[in-house]
Length: 369
Ligand SMILES: Cc1ncc(COP(=O)(O)O)c(C=O)c1O
Image (cartoon, rainbow, N blue to C red; front, side):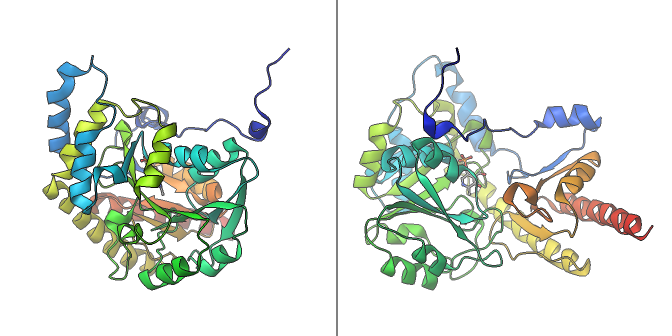
């Protein structure tokens, strides 16, 4: 007789992980893999983070300092806040799960954009919450759609700014008008995983709104800070929200190597500036080349670009992989003819464009015959 899990899990399937770099090398027989499907930094880890990890290695037999006091103090200084305004998570993913565990009762509603980052849905589903979709319009946020989706049962509302996978952002004026109209019983989760790359002058820093509205800002060390493999991110909110999340958090949820590396990379301004520059240069180049190719794409404030390929993205993902390049297929976001490419270094972006041109021209030739 099988043991049944909770009813809320009936429709859930285990996460299907992407292939590791090593597996792809073995599968394709290539050693020059360009991994552009996870929005990781193309620069490798920060030298300062590596040094901090090496220095800490002799102490890994000890449990972490479970409040991550030192990192929280550093973040507090960075954001002009108190250490009590921060929760450190095993990746931002964990903070997303904690939010659902802390605030969502079975039957409660959570408003989530479409298309957006998939992890928001999981935590809600596990709790038996109800996901209320709020479609983006032409891949842009229309916050009126989110306001109209609010009911008396709404607990959380996710805004991903800039949005994964489209790169679109919510400007300051729109966000403020929205917050002023949103009923007070809704907690806004403002996911700023990619905000480090945003350059638009009217991009709103979520930190400015914590005292006036019910908001938690999410940040990650996985993208510009180059620590995706260590798993560390954080939430920034008023003390009450953080206190409640801490009631659910496991005592040693983040490993100490991740915590020391995160502290070190916060000081590595040279590395962070190089990241920004590389992304800026890549974005300019890709805008120009994709326009020359006649491809439709969304303007981006992040480190990836969302583009229409006019063909089945499952096929294109396979064909690009055969050439050693991984991209994210839009089929995973219900947009089967789009792909998401992580902006990389100049020579890598050139290789991507060259390869994409060849693959798309093959499709054209095949459709003519
Ligand atoms: C929008 C968004 N939020 C959060 C995350 C998760 O980040 P972490 O690696 O810190 O769990 C990602 C990862 O891709 C993301 O795209």
